[in-house]
Structure formats: C-alpha cells, structure tokens
Image 1 (tube, rainbow, N blue to C red):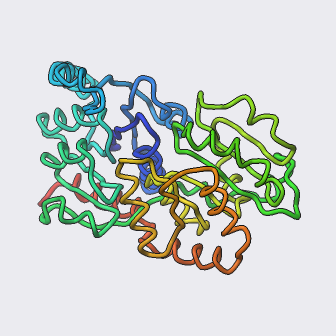
Image 2 (image 1 turned 120 degrees about the vertical axis):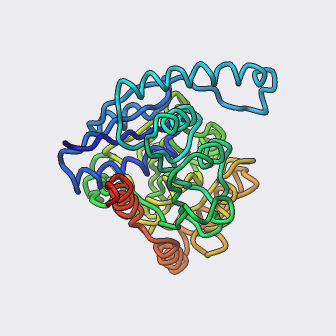
Length: 358
C-alpha cells in the first residue's frame, strides 16, 4: 500500500514552496505516494498547492500576535478548538507521517499527530526559529535545519543540517520567452522585484517613486502581491510590468532577471541560491528575515538594505546594474551558501522513519 504524506503550513508562502519541492521529490521516488496538505483558510498557498495536484484542506488556527495584545487572552481557547478540528481531520485523512516547515496552522496538526502516534518531521527554514517551530520541535521525531547557526536551538539527538531546497521547475525558465511576453528591451538588463507571497506595500510604494529613474537603464518586472497592486504601477512605462502574482511563470521571471530585489524569506533565498541570482535583500523589519539576510551578507552573498527609502533602494539596485563583476561575485557566492538537496535528504530520512525497524 502506498504511503500517505501530510504536509502542513501556510499563511505566507515561506513555509510552503520548500515543502512543495519535497512533495515533488517524494513523487519522483514513489509515483504512487499520496500527498495531502492542510493550510490556512484564506492564505495564498491554496493556489500553489492545488496547481501541484495535492489535496488541500484548510484549518483555522490562532496566531500569537504580541502587536495585537487584546487578542492574546483568546488564543488558548482558539487553539483548543483548532486541536479538536485537527484531531478530526487526522482521523479522516490517516496520514503515515506529518511534515511541516513552520506556520501557526501546523501547531495543532503536529500536536494531535503525536498524540495519535503519527511520526512528525519539522524543518527549520530560517536562521532563528519562530514560536511555531519551537512549539512543534518539542514533540517532533526528527528536526532538520537549513543553517548551522540554527543547531543550538534544537536537541542535538534528533536534529541535522540538510541545507535548502528549491522547486525544480524554477531552473527551466526561458529568458527569451519572458522578454517577448513582457515586451522588454533586449539591450537593457532586467530587474525582478518581489515582496514575498503576500507582497510588501512599502516596497510597492518605493518602486512607484524610483521607477522613472530605474527605467532609464533597466526593464522592471514587479510582483506586487495579491491585493496590493497600486493602480499607478500599471502606467509607469512600456518596460515596467507589474503583476500581482506568478505561479508557473516564476521560472521565466527568474530567467530574465539580471538583478533581483526581494524579501529574505527562506523559500525565496533557496531559489535565488539555486539559480545564482545577484540580489538586493530587504528583510521584513523586526522578523526572522533580518537574521536570514545577515547570514547572506556575512557570506558576501547579497546586498542588504536596512533603512528602506527610495534613495537607498535605487542606489543598491544601481550599484549592481553598473557593476557586472560585483554581480558575478554575488552570484557565485550565493550558489555556495548551503547544500541544495535538502528535499532529497528529507525524503530519504522520511522513508527511513517510516520503515519498520526489524
């Protein structure tokens, strides 16, 4: 009988795209494997997961948000209800193993899975673990991490460094196809701007200001995030293309990009490393992304903008557009920051975990 793998995570695409790479690798190893997913009711992950031909189910789970202190007293009650629903969902799906790379929706699933005796694998994407992974790591059978810097945060007996994983299809983009689709000038480099799966309004506003200057020397493909498109972005110029979201089109977007401007989520970083893209990082302030960005900068694998203003952003982009040698250096360094076969290693370890001990 084929195994049933349950993956869980969502709310943002950070914990989603790496697990999709694991799903693809598991299917490659076992074409008959069944893979399901439990995500959030209204997150951006559903489109990606269903396009990958995975069964998607949603679960409402509370997020411990200190900035909204008035919601904190209700969290234990909401979490208890989420655990009840998670138990019901697990009873229906009956998975052989649960895999997660973070997110609050995963916490009740993981806790209830362990109560049912279902093996749990937790993957730590970022340098610094968030609260969700700290809570889940306590009951996990196995923990994998991207960075060596993360090892002290978890029990050594069940934790290993596996590096990162990137969706395989991002490596097969067509540069010329993207140029023709977007009407880009062939004699100009292209800047790809993306604010993560949910977008970044502050970055969108900055791009609106610097776009006229940037267009003098580059094409721009700008992914604004769903629901965060500014009307003015659509009319900046013929070589400025703004779209809310790309799925399969991401491969071509990466292929055409000479410089990438991005947040510092690990799903994005892994794909940039797999492709060797010179990058300007703008981590989300006050989050785990700042440590991710620092890890890259310490390895001279990206440029970092900490104080985001139109001027600092434009200067960082122009610094790379005007210095081919620096772009090549960053591209070389980002390719070597970690192993990129974490998907294969996690699948291998997952199969071992499910293999009955003699």
